[in-house]
Image (cartoon, rainbow, N blue to C red; front, side, top):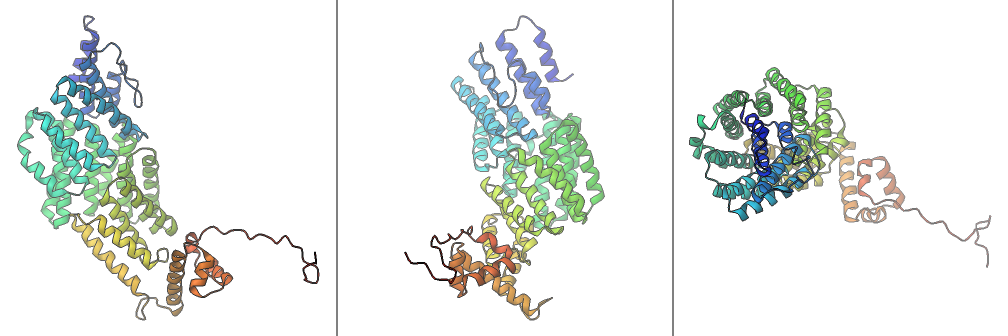
Amino acid sequence: MNLADDLLKELGDVTLSRDDRALLRCRAAEDFIGKGQYEAAREALSELWQGTGCRPNLEGLGERAVAEVLLQAGALSGWIGSSKQSPGAQSSAKDLISESASRFKALGETERVGAAHSDLALCYWREGAYDEARVLLTHALGDLKDATQRAKVLLRLTSVECVAGRYSVALDILKENAHLFDERLGHALLGSFHNHLAVVLKELGTTEGRADHLDRAIIEYTAAIFHQEQAGHERYAATNENNLANLLRRSGRYRQAHEHLDRAAAVMTRLKDAGLLAQIDDTRARVLIDEKRYAEAERAIARAVQALEIGGGAVYLAEALTTQGVVWARVGKQADSVGVLRRAWKVAEEAGALSSAGLAALTLIEEHGAGRFLSPEELYDCYLRADELLKETQQAESVARLRACALVVMRRLAGARLGDKNFTLFGAVHELEARLVARALDESGGSVTRAAKILGLRHQTFLSMLNTRHRNLLEKRTPAEKRRKSIIKVSKDGRRPLR
């Protein structure tokens, strides 16, 4: 028997008021949410709330009970929406939680205002709005005095800083507050602490090239899994199995990575958590890419993208699309790869995930910098944008990739050279011709007629070049307009008839 079950048993007391019953259900739901048992939490609230997208039944409740029901319904909407990748779930959750925070503030319940701000920050974090999440969590820390609640907020703040690429800041938060995380907080929060520490050590270990950090990250992930299993938090333990698999992949320990992914996938399949199962498929695809098992990787990443397309997890979708772009490049689907990598870049940038956007742009250069699907000018613009997006990154790996991509771009801008591998005069001429055609189309706004004039060519000559040798540049032209036929008839001898 656990806390939530004990609370629900109390509902059998017929002397309880409607407010008391509502508050018991809210406390039980909050306990279930903390364990990742979202369906149990929804069932606990079923008398008051019909599910994501619905407003709770607040009739006959006092102000405090109303605020609490709104908070738990909103928090659960966010979690279920993330789990099932439900469109609009985060927006609905934010509305309920914001109303709850306003009601708690009017009641003077500062601690509950802080709890509401913490849950509201999670909704913004899921949408990729990291600045808003950071502000809300900082406000929550100012409101909260309870050690357990403060520990939760600190871990959420660490998550925001990690996803934003500010790993040194995240490590400082964990070090300064490590004294809060002892056995009195229970296995659940201890597991979460070890998980966050593992993430930070993994990233900083990669950045600083420190194998000891990476080895310790493996230990921290293992500790996180142990504590979360002890707490009965299957969902969170499985998430860390996925994280550990990704770290083992980087170390070339592919067999062990697949074993951890198998365990994580089994749990997420049973829990029907489409969002986390998609992240596992993304990790699986990356392992398979490293193993050069591209057909299997293509199937795995297709499942991930399909699931993430449905919901609002923009950051995870961008990462999966980037992985898909790599797979398609490796199996020869070059045009599709370019398109999906551009989309990954756009999705991440629009969500405010600048680091993910920059990495998508770098991947575009890495996979297609030497090919014909991107002109040297496009590569140059792509690199400049990637450099801007990653200007605050602390990842040594990202910096190394930037430098490598700079060489790729400079080589393309310099043009073909006699000493290049597979050099041919025809290839060099074709590349130069493609650059000039692309530039003429850009300067003419896509007009074939004006582009031909810029290059000193006849319209039909230029159109023939475009339709044969440079078909990959057709998307730059504006749609062709049908020429109108003359309304004046011509006689058989070619003369116009007299009127």
